[in-house]
Image 1 (cartoon, helix red, strand yellow):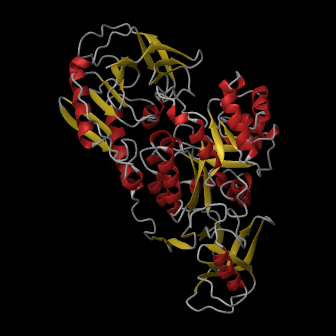
Image 2 (cartoon, rainbow, N blue to C red; image 1 turned 90 degrees about the vertical axis):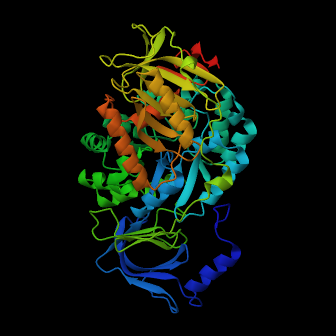
Length: 579
């Protein structure tokens, strides 16, 4: 049943009461379970009764009626609540369905997701209907509400008041943020401040995005309603947030694998109370998750010397309590959704068995297919239809300013020193042609990029924040060939060398998301990234690079739909050219 104001109907509540009253059999009983009770911060022994998707009893008794009840003896096992990833970006090549399927198999049975892709790519009714359909999955799927598009759009329609209001008020949307546009708010943006006030009025928390923030900045944002932040990069920064009353999310991601360092430095600074700490993988690319999802972070916390109760709480109870969801999630107690992980050893958070909404997702190490296929086409999500053409004559590179990659995500402007009127560049340097083209073919930006690679001849990608198309390469002919291959496959990424396609990833869902399993996308990503690295890509993560070329929450310049944009001055330096 879709999560609305009430998850369970009156009829189902009466049926659940009948189980506890001994008139109806539970569907599943975990007998002699050594379970983690967060109300007492202790491991206790009890029998756990489950009626379909809900825990209905935890205690010493066994049910009086056990007709068709599955009874599992959990002696010598440890039972903990299903893990919660509260800061998921489920569009790093994978999609919300495939990520939830994979994450649940490793014990992360609840995801709180960024709504950015659906917010930008779908009209309101389809998007909200879609998230309700996704809530039917065995995993619990909640969402954030974005206050801005995190880029400069040519058309502001996605940011209409009615669309934003309906997203914010939806029962599956449990927070506002992440607030990347906070400088605008401090500078006087009352439209965003109004939405923040509405978020607070609805008793939903606000997630900040405050890298390097001073005490003064953190204090100001707390006054405006921000309650949590995940951008601490040192233990001192994490403690600063705790000192100012924030809930602090400790990040461990592909480009910021900081958790061991954060925990050590926090403990060195005297932190021994972690009930206002959460953890997140911050939407990493597929291959990062080969080591696990929240189970990976709990393991790091255990290895860092935390009390196991704290380590598990930071990925379950603390999260549920922060989001005002602990009456449904994060505890093993009556009334909670039946998300349970069965462990062989409390020091190994990878479950041997997983139960999500009362269904076995993994049983004694064997994964069961409970997710099936998702009907994306029913919600207007199809392959990218590129119904326009591109030729070498369309690409001219006369702009005096280029973009320089400082790392995976930071871009600076630079004066182009080389002659860019030719159609081919030398591989003796790391400057390449760079083009961003509207996915509908209406406008383009052509310049140079320094630092991406030395030997990428032709590369095309529709994977970007807005779904617009990025071309990079040393050879204009191969760039056009890569575009043509991208067009034929309906979006994704293509790599061309000497007029031949040597690598590709097909992203069938509006050119941004794959329909393949997480394992399938992992292999494709690793193969493609290997090809890029062999051709000179030197930073941590090319997937993040592509996603963030247009993201204006990062310094110093960005390539947006309106043109090359100065983030600090909030001005377009060179506008996009109509085709």
